[in-house]
Length: 498
Ligand code: B12
Image 1 (tube, helix red, strand yellow):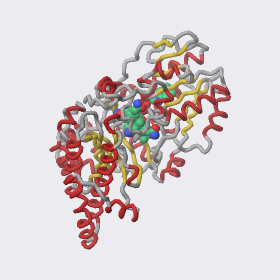
Image 2 (tube, protein in one colour):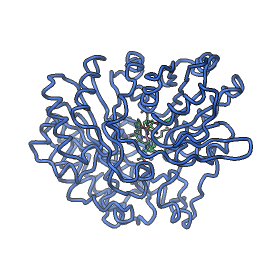
Image 3 (tube, protein in one colour):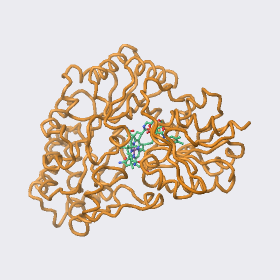
Image 4 (cartoon, protein in one colour):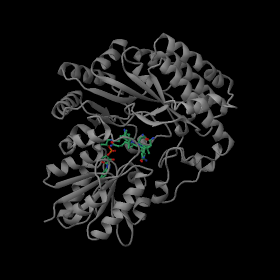
């Protein structure tokens, strides 16, 4: 009886974050039920195609996880190879993209089954049925393709995360990830879901605005066990909004301190929630090892925040978040979305000015500016269509969607050139201010003097004859975009800002 499940993770931009948590989570109940599971992560596999080809020889099925964008292309390529080598085994796609667009994903003719939403229980049931020689008919949370039609089985209710098993961390080859990224780390999710309804975000589509969190004791136990067993230096929490339950967050931090273990950890949250914490509680986070926090601040224009349905976010709390974290040793990244539908030049300028001010006063804050990218399923698609954005019509077309592709009709030509220039100045200015704060007095004076004309540019909205940018490029100024999840450098160089 075939008993082997092969799971594949396609490549993505940037340094690997650690073993793909989605596949470790899917693998865990399978292993418990006696399946032999093999995870192939292209980030640490020298020749992923050859490895996949070898592993599927005796497999029961082949599963792939991917997000919208370039991961799709590789998922299609490798799955097509599996289809040729093993036409008899089902190919199963899971993850955010396939969940949001199951019919279109199956229509590409590559996968036989899509697992929608949380995968642990659905994949287990699918694999058990396959092992018994049956199909996925009737398995809640799955969609399948028959020669005649696509069948969407009923949804599976979101499972309380406390009832799900610990992801199969023992399957991660931490040495291999360390060799690739230079850091011994793991990703971990202590919760899923976010109570807010920002209309550019997919989270509410997946988890329906319900915060679903593991109890603090379980988190403390799992994370400290992981950190000590695998000698990890860093744990990146992938929660959509870690601070929704502030009491839980404080209990976790206290548990880490009490464990006596030393490791760094990072998370993302919203500024209104950090502002609910006392200064002492923020210091406790730092003491427990928090080294970085990412915040989806997105814009400093109240009008744009309204357009984004980001009612919980206000500008004062961005400053307050920066103030509360100053001097704690925690680095902070503010994510920015530029080019949102309805954003005017004046809104964008306001965002740049407020953020430049934050950067001048609080040098521990970095920025990760992104061009608005319309991902599938987000609630403002009707408006985007009205404004002329063309929605990709197939799985392959979604594979072409990358950050910075700029499919936005209102940002074509000159406005886009201007936005890029403005962003180049913004990144150079904030980085120069940051460097100034780290320098000794002479270096600080020089850098502060250099930052003055850059700030003036942004105040006056004047970017002609950009001699400072030419000069900086000449000196290969280190202007870095940082990951919202870990604060790690994503890209260097001003050409790549958006
Ligand atoms: C970590 C992460 C990443 C990492 C993933 C790498 C890694 N090694 O972990 C990286 C850095 C690659 C990444 C990149 C991107 N990401 Co991202 N990312 C996340 C994040 C924060 C956590 C995902 C995660 O691991 N969760 C924990 C696991 C356990 O949950 P899961 O992934 O949902 O997996 C479960 C199910 O989906 C399902 N499942 C998943 N895969 C499979 C496969 C099979 C076979 C089965 C059966 C089931 C299954 O079962 C799992 C267990 O329940 C989410 C937001 C969030 N809080 O979830 C955003 C998120 C997934 N990312 C998102 C986006 C937009 C992106 C980017 C496209 C752009 C960007 N700005 O970051 C890029 C694309 C990169 C590229 N070049 O292709 C969106 C989703 C977009 C989409 N439609 O796919 C999210 C939801 C953020 C958001 N709120 O908008 N991301």
